[in-house]
Length: 253
Image (cartoon, rainbow, N blue to C red; front, side, top):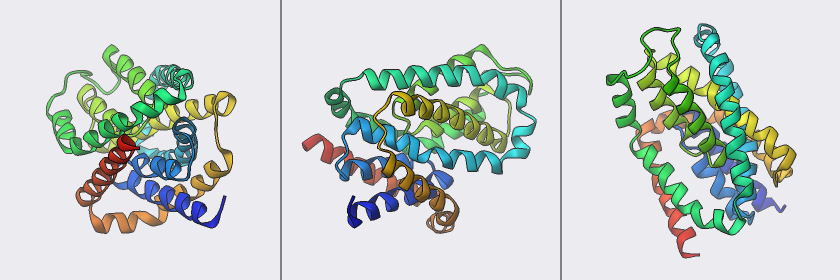
């Protein structure tokens, strides 16, 4: 790794950490950074998952009070999170490298669309309560939804937090902060299961993964102030524009 590659990976991970802390969608920056460094699409995706995992841990620690009252929910939803993540990880590793490279632009566009629709999804979630009628009730639809989210999260992952927040908002009678806390914990569990699976069976590039993990942690802590000055809306549009540019480049190369 030369100095330029190191700088690019650190910058991408730093930005991803800050973006995830404020608006979500950080993988749309860090994943292309790995592609630009010359890593194959599948290895870049696996390495990106490993690199960004520590950021979810920090968020869950910060949300300890909101998570304390949701212990039973977390215990019930851990199984579909883990099994879904294992299924998604296995699906990713069984996908031929060329095939995954071909569908990556579509996955990036899908994740960019989720960012674009984030406010609408959040509003819909808050006004259409379709699931639990009490704090202790976990509807069957949520188990199925979390399993599907975990499959997607382990397979690609960009936009997972947005989807999870919308599903929780629709199916649970919680305020935004408790839904956001549970979203972060489920993302932590899903990505932890994927990291263990990839560490055992996947093409993880450990040097850039560890380097980017440091960048993501720093970005989540130090970059939040900068990201907040931009505001979530402007930051989101910047990430969407960048993601669409990356998808276009991947389509034509």
